[in-house]
Image (tube, rainbow, N blue to C red; front, side, top):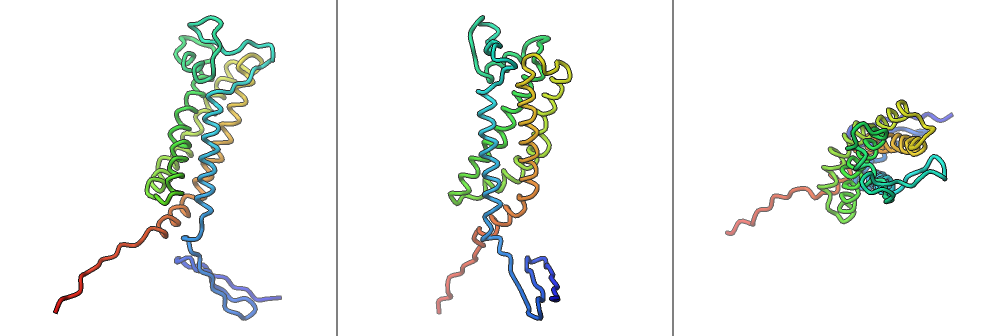
Length: 215
């Protein structure tokens, strides 16, 4: 049976003794690109969800009518135009569902889409925007605000049920919202510190240069 003792220090040094041999492994955040990849992937997935929520909807039955605008009888439309009208409809039956779609539109634009842009600048070597946005707006909004669409859809289903339209659509959007809240929130919580360490380690340190003294 081998004798193993491992110690972690604040400087990120992993040291220990294994079978009588001294072991020391230094963790270098400059070479750990995993946090950036993970955060970038979640931003891309969130952006895809943002686009899908604007143009894709689900009928309860295949025989249900297509989405139509209130002011133009018979004119079919897409979800982004549909919820914009329904959110303003007085006493409408779809108000909470429309509110869920609207909150998805604005929240995922503010967080996922902008984070995706920030990630592209990060890949190009411009780190400051990504560092600030992922650690502030992206971090707090993904944890505390991404739950809002899920809550609105839950209210819609409690009040109106799922048997009639837009029940199936509301369930689909509710589950998708729950997934992205957990996925984005946990990703930020688990990886943001290492992401910042990676950026800070790669940024060049300031150098104070002085001209040689002329004799």
